[in-house]
Amino acid sequence: MKILVLNCGSSSLKYQLIDMETETVITKGTYERIGMNNSFITIKQDEEKIRIEHPVKNHEKALKFVFEDILMGEKYGKINSLSEIDAIGHRIVHGGEKFSKAAIVTDEVIENIREVIPLAPLHNPAALLGIEACKSVVPNMPMVVVFDTAFHQTMPKESYMYPLPYDFYEKYKVRKYGFHGTSHRYVSQRVADILGKDIKDLKIITCHLGQGASICAIKDGKSVNTSMGLTPLGGIGMCARSGDLDPSVVTYLMENLKISSKEINDILNKQSGVLGISGVSADFRDVEAAKDEGNERAILAINMHNRIVAEYIARYMVSLQGLDVIVFTAGIGENQIRIRKGICDELKFLGVEIDDEKNNTRGEEIEISTQNSKIKVFVIPTDEEIMIARDTMNLIKK
Ligand code: AMP
Image 1 (tube, protein in one colour):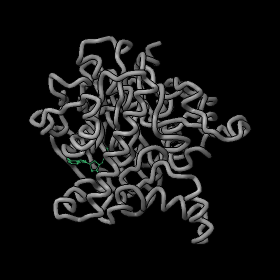
Image 2 (cartoon, protein in one colour):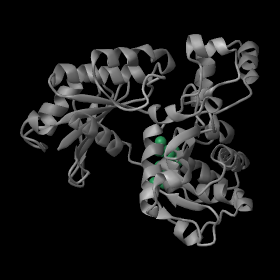
Image 3 (cartoon, helix red, strand yellow):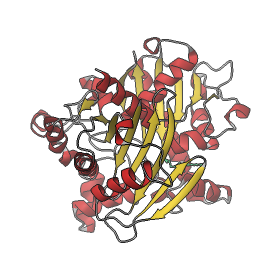
Image 4 (cartoon, protein in one colour):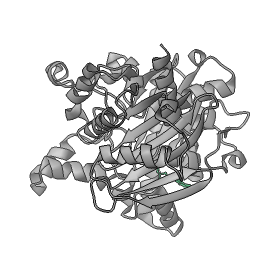
């Protein structure tokens, strides 16, 4: 069985064709700058990276090119006919309260995704473009949607409610949803498998630290708390996002700088976090380099980051009433050795102990805690695409 996984942004389309017997990627690629006159696609297959300039007007044209000229094309083709692909799995950022698991695409499901556009104005319309493009280019292909929010729908009400007038929840669905659910689900299941334990017997905290970052507390295999909120801006400070603030900061800045909600949103999403504090970059590699040169704001940005992650871990031990395993994943979690060390050092008082030699690794599945550590610590590279492909396969098999 072969599943095509699609992840659409407003001007991008990422795909992976996955062989489900071996759970391996046959080919993958990214179309960028869709709708602009310099669109191009980068394909990764057979250990080769190929870039093709091919301007396209919209997602439908991009998808048509991917199917006809890449997947089934003469030069780069990996399949002979469309019938070799069993289904398409779409990544959807926001499923609101309607979806606690993946769903087969129907008109009603599309309508439900449309209804939560106000909660994910950048992401959900792009995903719908991808679904519509598939309906037009491969009309008979079964499709499944997998939501970033779905895994967190198991949070208890005391975790997901904000202390606001209750009406705002009932009328406008203002609550914590949480994101990166597919990643938190993958790495928590994977760590249970590595430990040879039933996930229901583990209390796990997963730290998805990438451009966007969130922490998740997992008990009985279910999310019981997570740091992102109504939108992916909440929780810990990130590469360029502020994370949680005293809400008065927002109104104070708007009033005093006379800026609009769009402008403050831009500041909080694109000019804050580690970039805002350090003034150096949104990439931790650059900020670490500046730290090594003694740049005080870079040092502060990294110390603030490590402190808040450690504080969230300690806080979620309350949600879990204990803790067995911490998992680091995503770009920073998988690759930034000193960030992992910095966070774990803040947790030494809980008996967390890192083996520096084991921690000296990038992008590898490994336990990095010492034998004596009271809480195990792992690095697990995330794989959201395989989870989307598995969910898709399981649903269409039914
Ligand atoms: P993500 O959004 O998961 O792709 O994470 C992006 C962030 O991960 C970047 O800002 C980098 O700070 C970090 N990162 C990604 N790859 C590496 C690497 N090979 N070495 C060190 N840091 C990395």
